[in-house]
Image (cartoon, rainbow, N blue to C red; front, side, top):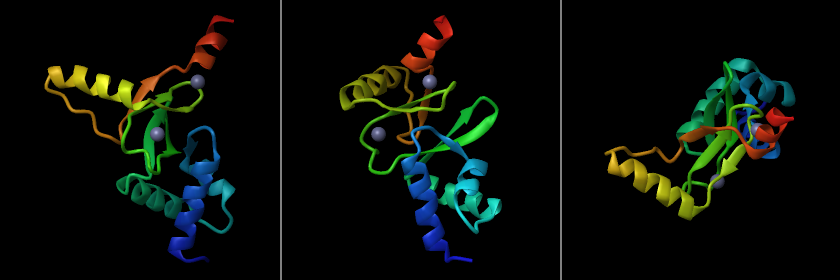
Length: 124
Ligand SMILES: [Zn+2]
Ligand SMILES: [Zn+2]
């Protein structure tokens, strides 16, 4: 068994290298010698630290890498799990619209969307 910090680095690296969001199962299957319960624990730690975001893809909870991205909002595709980084101008505008309603969007929140590629696939 490896130490916790090494495993945590691997979990983070696995998320970072994946273009789409991964479930805890998928993360665990890509790392050697790590149990699913450990992956769950590390993922929730990473989430608390703002390094990973959790979202619901269909009925599965998945995770994406979010390191160094606290200054703008993110959307996630509910179909393919892609993480979309919204530029700061768009983020500010979305925040401003919600603020008019007295709402504040958490910086680690992922806005559920369907990405342009998946919209094209749906049309085809
Ligand atoms: Zn980002
Ligand atoms: Zn998509």
